[in-house]
Length: 507
Image (cartoon, rainbow, N blue to C red; front, side, top):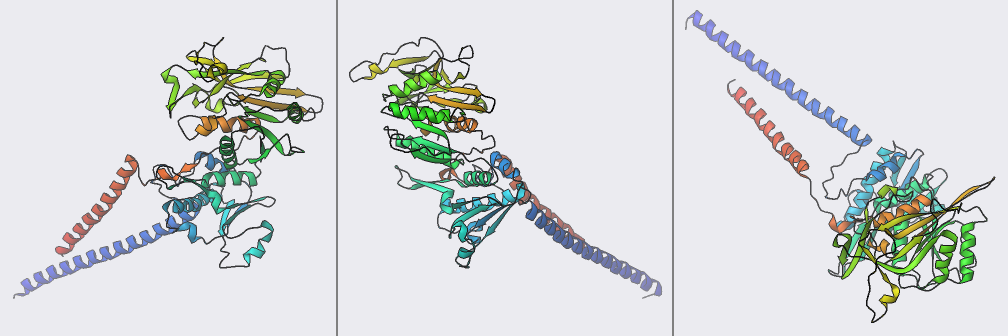
């Protein structure tokens, strides 16, 4: 080979070698950069997750997402609050109970408490203490009377203890003979945090001893307790005294009348030594006979309970359930119902209510307001027509709209004190047990008026979550985003691999 050809071949070899070195160096640098970027990215994500834990909730009912009401409760925590859970942390973070419903409840608690920590800017902290692994914890926290399964909420000056059993309810389904679970995690967290961090706790007393409807009382107590109230029962005829912490009393569908002596005690309690600031809700039983109770409401508060049952004749204004036609009507805009005014409620077996003290009355201290009204399609059936063998004659009301629920507000101003008492009278005692139908505002009608008259402006109102409806699903937008990620990432990796392969093939 001539010297000229050798030099030319050497140049080609050197160029090829230099090219390989350059490309190899570039590939090495790119690999190092990518690895470093991935490591930095993971570190940043880890730091952000510790500070702002995020989860992708793909459940149809946002099972693992706090409601806006709960988020507001968490954001308002400005003092340090410890949540001490006396169980192993793994029980909540990775539950294996054998029941998916139970696993959902435990995971909810774990995720929601993390959210409380984030939303409260670190004021809410959570710590898991395993009593089985460390028996000395029972002695250390003896003053709180905790045991395995207890959950302690405490600040510097207040505390409250709940149990893991308080995080759910279970009921037997009569058709499938299986248990239906409802999660109470969100309510319990919100109401307990609100109470321990300075929220006002109200005691509601249910009056008994007059053949009241126990089913409705049980349902109402459950609903109120879930929303942070304390409840108890009292028989005015036999009880020596009324709990001094009671701010409101509730009478649920009595079938027999109150005695004059009981009415006297009730009146004295409402008067509160002229200071007022006591409240009463009376829910009437259309089959009850309570002349003493109704005379008290009429004479003292201007609200008359008639013996006329309200029925609807317009099919747009009633709902047929198990053979009954349950009237539907809109809520009036009052101080007690303004947050859900014009929404529909179910009012089964409602007696007509009449009011006497309006804004033009001479009565200076008491004013009446109608909360539930029925249009001209509503007719009246006198109780006498309900007797056996009698035809249920449907009559026009003397005036429309027909009132089915009203309240009286009594104000009293002295040089030393300003007081206010509210007395709510409902012609139906059954409306609270229809609250499971979320398209109607019966639950709000049960909770909101009491929240307002008891001055609980910051109280959270949350419904129980039926776990039988919890399914893993996601919206079209979620599906599209997931599809893009699942397709785009592998595709990008394939393209990069092909380019690298082709480049290196020609080296």
